[in-house]
Amino acid sequence: EIRTPMNAIIGMTELVIDTPLTQTQREYLTMVQESGESLLGVINDVLDFSKIEAGRLELDPRPFALRDLLGDTLKSLAVRAHRDEIELACHVDPSVPDLLTGDSGRLRQILVNLVGNSLKFTKVGEVVLDVQLAAEPQTLPIRLHFRVKDTGIGIPDEKLKMIFEAFEQADNSMTRRYEGTGLGLAISSRLVELMNGQIWVESELQSGSTFHFLADF
Ligand code: ADP
Image (cartoon, rainbow, N blue to C red):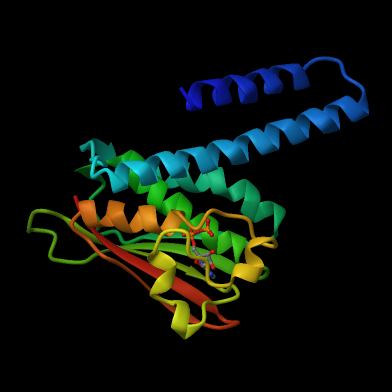
């Protein structure tokens, strides 16, 4: 009931943008579209978070191809990286099996959050996603180690733990400069927990951050 009308607002705006319009009308509608998309993002976070609080967030495991999923996920983020002239790269170790069973939608959500944050907090340099086996490939479940490394602003030591809590941002004065709800990492940590893994971060101010998580497939 909350999401459906939002999708209609965004979809219909997109249709109108493709019709003959004056320059000003097009600018206004582009603003409606962008605000609609960002509001939908906030709504999705709040809905997920309320599910977590109610203990109702569950995974939906199915077979998927890991490299295709990573490619698709990064493609959607590449537009932003390109616009900001940040290099976005992905490396998957050849020993990582491709056909896995797991909740690919939720894995994508974690990656979009981590890579999206890295892009948001990096002005120059690169964001690299790296995937390796965390345990011998012969043993089931397959345990993977994901790493998202950036050359961004970094996170002060005293904030490293706090940022995984709901509504927390490293520097509240930055919320205006960098928009966001402070829910992304809280949701990602819960999802990683459901995948029997853990999430942590290493960071150095002004030189960058590396977010790590382990997950079973
Ligand atoms: P949001 O990004 O919506 O504020 P998150 O839960 O995703 O919420 O992140 C919480 C906070 O952690 C961010 O506001 C930011 O202060 C800090 N943070 C997360 N990722 C990074 C990063 N790659 N570099 C620097 N700071 C980060």
